[in-house]
Image (cartoon, rainbow, N blue to C red; front, side, top):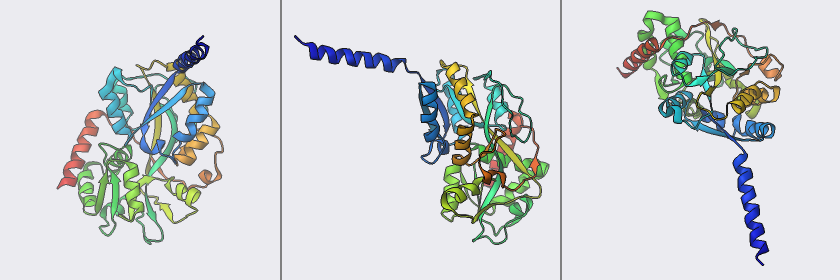
Length: 327
């Protein structure tokens, strides 16, 4: 009698069926979120324990690259959720007609302004800022204008066509300089050493000593304080003020796991996931709870309010930037 082989076959068949019944939620995001030091490796087991599902993060070099992939894939995308768009990319994201309302009640949020969008779900935020090493740069610029005009400063920032951080600088320059933005880009280009595709690449180059300053976030010094016990890195506060980036997640209309996707979004606003995101993505939490004392001790930055430009305006600004830096 072939009892043992039959038993093995039955066991394997049961295992295969059980495995097939476990849904997989796929989240497209940017590479620093999924890095070994990022939030994803800690969020994954925490959510999987809650949902009884598989959580799969698929990283891209930057959020704009991720969004372009989703648009290219359309209804055939494997993504259930995109995580990493921001308040400045929302007009274009809405026009894509790829996303569905999250249908969740928002808890009390700790954001620079009231959040009213019902499709894009905020999970962290922070002000764009330039970072420097205070041991190496004794006299940092006190304004955006000084940063633009001081040719003794070596600057690194991100490409506004591929990076939400770089796009943030595009907004910032146009907000402050208005019709003189092209002249500002030309001045900045004289002492820009690198324009990278994404944040990880550019911040890494800065840490290697390739520049005096790098475009990042007001919260970036916290990484060095928390994980390196190093207080040398500072974020400059500019006299003109700073733009706030609010990062969001959204559910794809094409997702076959919408309820699971909503569960994941709601999960992002719980205290433990918010702490993980704040301390591993190095951004401010969106919930109004005490997450970490260091976050409460951050300097207060003057926040510039700015409406997201429409698609045509954004393309015009990108063209002006590209022309100015290539001269």
